[in-house]
Length: 496
Picture 1 (cartoon, rainbow, N blue to C red):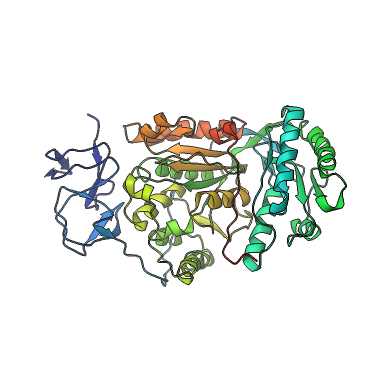
Picture 2 (picture 1 turned 90 degrees about the horizontal axis):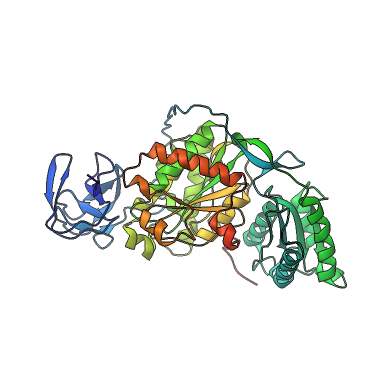
């Protein structure tokens, strides 16, 4: 008989409806017989006891908030009856937990591109990147012209990546723009890059060129529009040369240990922490056991589950860096007069998520149980293999761009509500429920909803591993097929 509800952890005092439950039905939860007093929508919580006002609701084995009033057993409990326990900045204590993961080594390879500097890409694309938003029209025109002229034959894509920044910025905003654009220019998924500047912007092309550091001058070229007579003809001449080089590149066997994966969720629902996010966690642990790398970000969506990550840090130094990661983002919220716990979106709430703690406990499952090996600030590039934490907000566009920019080859993106968005690397959508996968086949690349329907997690994970390897070897995901490719840069300050 198909399971219609689930108690995730034996300590939980709520269960989750796998499919809609009707008032009057009786459910049996670990020997406790409960007759439902209200309908329970799929993905939402049903109370397993009578709650007094102010009593903690336990899900995933942890408090996800407290009741704002007395709530009886056997009813639907949602954000209207639950209030977050989160407050401001906290002091933390390092209580390291070492988890031994018994995951065998497998000789798995994918077909990737070995670059001149030894790095590896999973795509061979030509990118046109503006230093400033003023030349967005030019880069779009150049990309379209080269696509029309070549048909993209011999390369995976020809893309322009317009943005609004590069001028009228100060301080951290200006540095953030420079870092993200530098990271893009150096990303190994690009076989060749043309950087287009205007000439009078804050992000001066000559200074930006020095900021990039050492790079392959054959494959990365610059053009300053104010310094040439015809920016279109000059740009096309450069691009034709880059294209000729790029299309000669071939895929070779690359060990899975060189794969770098970003972990992201968006439009989460009550199934996220039951199906898709734990699936990514199992995959992340597998990849790390093979010597690979995964990166977790969305710092505000760690609030309420941050101690789990802190205690998995390999060293006290990494613990201290993770404390700063959390408290610095809380301070950012508080400096703008915003509370730290009001994160769940209307879509999250409609899908069954009531508080930020509930969202965080589901969100952090994406990184499995591996120890934390590295902590990065926004715009920094990966230096350490294994599980890394990255400073970035929860916003889908900004966070996915940050994951790509730290060096991830692709972003694995779980969703219960659905989204077409893709950043500048393959952005694989993993649905938390089968209804979404059936409803939006043009958005969803892999359906994790089968886990709620009885498919064992390890069976789903094996299929998922095979699919990720295919994508790393060149199989396109939906955002690539449809050309949904864009970037977003984190902004905190004034615009001049």
